[in-house]
Image 1 (cartoon, rainbow, N blue to C red):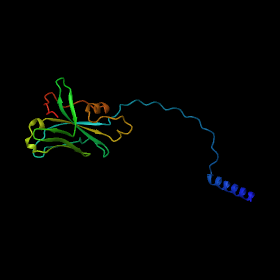
Image 2 (spheres, rainbow, N blue to C red):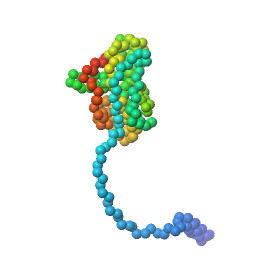
Image 3 (cartoon, rainbow, N blue to C red):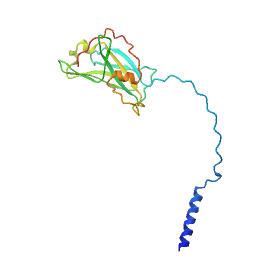
Length: 192
């Protein structure tokens, strides 16, 4: 019985090894010679990965909203994300104060919110309130400067955490350019 079991095991091992054999392929040959190293290429400039677009506008009746179209020569992907910042004020020393939307204010009439949404073609910004928007003065409606930052989806995977509520941190992290619109006569906004 022991001989029969041993014979069965050897036959099974032989069948197993035979199934692993690849026809027309012999044992591996000797290691080949290493090829020559290629030439180093020239270092190019890093391309932009996050983009910023700047707009200046007023909110006007009846709908108190604005569509901010993305440039025709820019393609936003479905996986990209848009962040919107309003230039809230400029300090006496020229320091710009940016706030991320949405922003909610408590006014003497009630709550007011600046909000936004986006598509791959544009960004919509609007006002919403628990009172008639016609009550608002020009300090709430006029001379807004907005920056729309389009962040590609690859950011966030293994990237350091960025406080997106802090425009200066976003600007530094994504290496975004400075203001292009004139803010020298920018009005003071209501306190939050």
